[in-house]
Image (cartoon, rainbow, N blue to C red; front, side):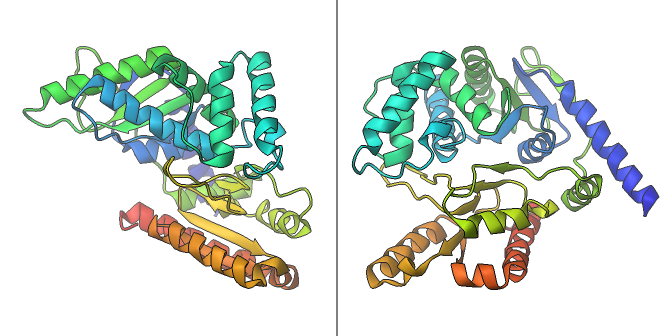
Length: 353
């Protein structure tokens, strides 16, 4: 067993070395692994940049492709609140003074951190309320702000976009549009764009870096657990919820529980109001809700079911536990969550999810 663990650690160290040599400030073609695999591998190493997968379909023009990527980054940023604006924790919905409060703290954060105040206040307001944007911001302002916000939300210094790039005969124009849009994003957003595919979409403009296959997820997870490394977690349990705190204390000791977000925001489209799950695994599309006695009221029960259906239609699995059950048998609750998370990861690895 010791030799097997040593081999896994060596394999992970080799992957870390490979990833650390890939440029973070330009467009690069990655061969040997998929965009999803390289993003998942980057997430394992805290000193590397945040990496998210973006698969835009608008290849008719550079402007259309850029707009689609910016909208995808915007959706991720809204889900990560309050990770990039801790002062907003505890604010929920547009009721009362919450709207004015979040705009005020966002404006102050923008002043201190060097963001556009119009950009940050608008983003914070929409993350809280789900309302459409009222600001008319230039793409240059949006990409610069979103790149920093998403990286901060994931507790990283830089951001990398991992994009699938499958070159096919007769699509030279589409390939050139992808490259031009990627170059614009990298330059204006000061981020890396890694185009993953069998061949470079434009070898004269985009260099290639070959990466060895990604180690198996279960093997890497086991290695990290044995090495005593902390699981990745964003957000925090609600400060007034002893149930959330108790469950987090259990999850923090579990190697499989990485990637969770406490009290984040899910909003796939601006025309829909945001959902704030107690606990969210966005990569695996799993939501866990912890229900107090107020959820037994008929109106709240109906609202919960409507919310669950919305999530399920978007491909999420929803687990609901009463607070009493969590406190009575917290290990069984954690085991049920683990089973669902591992099943989802297995399906994703097999391409069936």
